[in-house]
Amino acid sequence: MNQTTKISRLSNDNSSINVQWEDGQISNFNYLWLRDNCPCDIDVHPTARERRFNLIDVSENIKPKSYKINIDGKLEIKWDEGDHISSFDQKWLRNHCYTINNNKEYCSPYKLWDNSLDLSKVTIDCSEIMDSEEGLINWLEILNQFGIAIVKNAPTENNSGLKVINKISHVRETFFGTPFEVIDIPNPNNSAYTAGKLHNHTDLPYYEYAPGYQFLHCLINEVDGGMSSIVDGFKVSDFLRNNNPEVFDTLVNTYVKFKNNDFTQETIRFFHAPLITLNKDKDYNDIRFSVSTMGIIDCGPKDVEKFYKAYRKFAGLLHSEDYSVKFRLNKGDIFSFNNRRTVHGRTKYNPNSGHRHLQGYYLDRDEILGKLNYLKKIEL
Ligand code: OGA
Ligand code: ZN
Image (cartoon, rainbow, N blue to C red; front, side):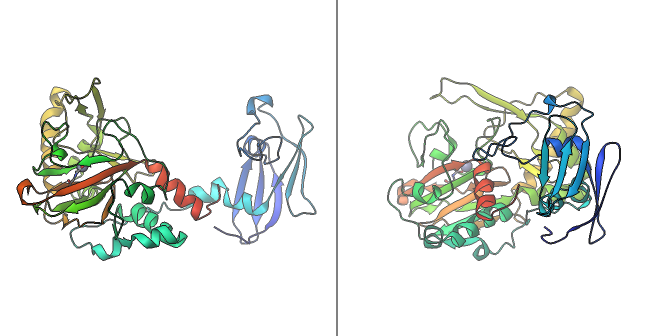
């Protein structure tokens, strides 16, 4: 963001004020946009920081009676309606200029990775998170950029992961409870609560919005087997986009059903979504993938064959050695990951060989990004 550039010339036309900046850039500020974004306390509640002004209270033809740079260096506009004056900080105008901002090339926050990921790059000690803001920012940055972080040396008492996770925010509740207990139990209502193998998956894809992040806190892991795996679904999607666009398009465009109706629930949950979705900048938004909770495919007859071809290709890559990072969770680790980007799994383990107990927590993606934005003091 440019902090210092000043306005060198102002002019106007029928619908906007045009600004020429000292560095030669040009901005166009539409009158309705300017009126709508008046920052005064009458129009914006000073503590709620929410707009009180309602645009329909002025006509669509509102325009300045006069405008100038005032003695405080602000762009001051006297409006021809409502006897109102708006003053805009130059730096604010520059940072929010929709002309300049829309000409900037989109820059993805994501660092994509495959099986060559060096886990030490995404490992952080729990004490850093608990004792310093830098440590917390570091954890959040790693989660946002890589979608995976391993916290080391966390306490191992029951429920102690919550204190660490609450450094970020409140958790996302689900019917599995907080924390959910990942142990081998009789009559499980989830495949994770067995000693069986878990194919790489995202959790809870049958929710309209699946939990953004997941935290698996290892209290004890003394069993034979039970190795963890994780794959960057965005990296796999990127491979398909570049090398197999037909498969990629099918995955982005086919709505797939996911469902939960386990025996403990007096609820039947299902939701249709593509396996890959994109955001407004065509960057990766989320991945949904779960062999165990995918429902019965109900796309149209002409799409079935195409879908299964694409699905098999995607599934193959999401389980391939080239993309899988494998490791063993140890007592005191908090395996943290973006549940709408990565797929995670584990090998089967021998429940008679010792104890294995993970406690799981979910957090919405808004909480990770919101905290990071706050700590980095981003300007809105
Ligand atoms: C889960 C899960 C992995 C493991 O609980 O969602 O995938 O290692 N667990 O037990
Ligand atoms: Zn899982």
